[in-house]
Image (cartoon, rainbow, N blue to C red; front, top):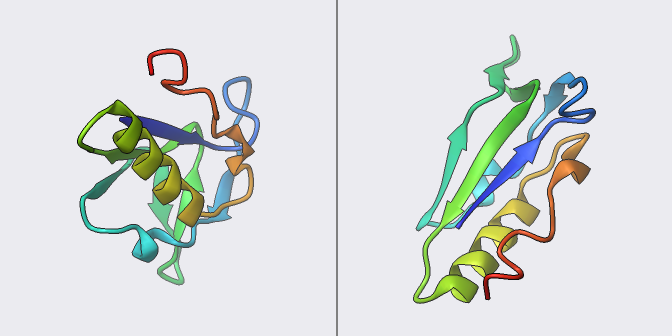
Length: 93
């Protein structure tokens, strides 16, 4: 199951430069793919607009994979993360 975390204002516009925290808290077995990120001069990871991160988790079934992906996504924080949809795979289960 993959969830996309988008920046504030996406898709009409998007913000950039928002510091992303919590990436180090994501457990093994959950994969975070960077799409709209950048490294700031101070070394922090920041949003670079649009679709920022994809959070992918596997599980014994679709429900377990969805739960693991959402749990990991909750560990990641940045301004505008309210773009995270909470209806992914609900009907399929």
